[in-house]
Length: 506
Image 1: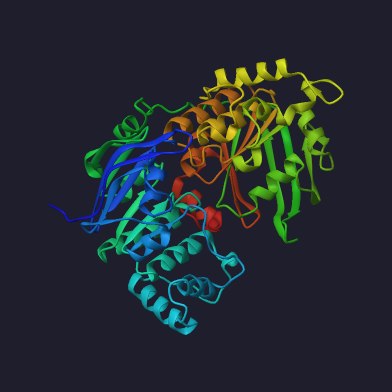
Image 2: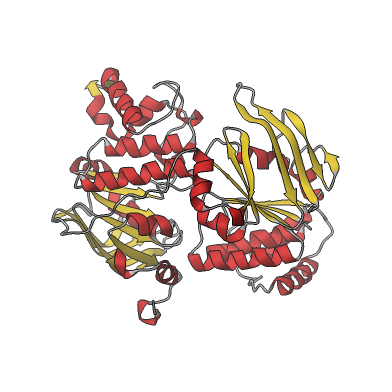
């Protein structure tokens, strides 16, 4: 019998508002294994890991580390017991060098430690893992994959032997994912125990030894990964069959709706983020824009919708030059936008109905600054019914809805406007498999109704599943545009990493 390193027994978490997040969870992690945690949004997996890391206290239950019961009062208690956590959003200081970030992290544990000592320890660790990280480079200048390695190194320098990774592949290219997996396998050989939180079933199969599936605050099953299929994992996670995928039709595309020609756009620092991009979007198609975050796609779509101004080039909508039009004027023409962050697309202090009309407010004004609430409630009710939004009422604060339901409100709000151009960025990022399947099916239905969809995503499975055509962006430039059938996951990954098409063999 393998030796348990973590034992969580009958963990219950009830929040002050009465929400029961965990309902008697038992979880055993074996020493030196890679253990995946699966579950829908709201299943309780994040709460469970935050309890393990000392961020929040359980209402009741016990935690044992190496057989000894512990009572954590904060993350520092967990760190002292060898537990480290790498978050989905990195906690590095972008303007500091790698070494400065690592030094700052260790100073919190040992105020006397010197930078040269940190460098010695880091180089020793990198040699052991076979890693190369430029210690004197500024963090914000490094690729995302390298930044993630810095986060892992930072955790290991604190002598962590239990590593919790929260959605670690969400911002990586396929090549970077494979590099990460190689590192995790080396860490496993060194005796490090890894807890891997992900919503990607393929990754569970690729990297984990065992998997625990959670649903509605309870553990449904803990299984050897090698003995369960992706289809079985999906059914256990959401209790429905999610193996069917939307059909992407071919055929003759419609008229050209959007034309972008030699577009140049600067970022917040005044640097060129979009460098001479030319793209065309046609009626009744999904054009997938693939790329690692930070390669200009954010600035590109903000320029298309009018949030950010292009300083060179043009944007045409049905042959009308809209380069200088305001956001409102573009919306009235039929361009809708779902941003990559619900923090941007929603106002958490408002309720479901108020958020349902935010981007189309002028249509609900029955007088001078007077909202026609009966119409607003009809729209909100339509979104709730057609997009399967689970909410106590139309007046429920949006912040209390799950991430999947918040995403459905955002997408439904824009879709009910019946736009001609629908720009969606990371529409299923961080969603569970049920919500992901719903959103993807909905995008295909909109496409089949003749809508033109620009899908911006770092998820290559999503790009390959939904797109009719694919464009790849790297360093603010379009590396390649073509029919989906011209690409493989490997080819897309290389293009996203900056390898030119001429150097790629399928």
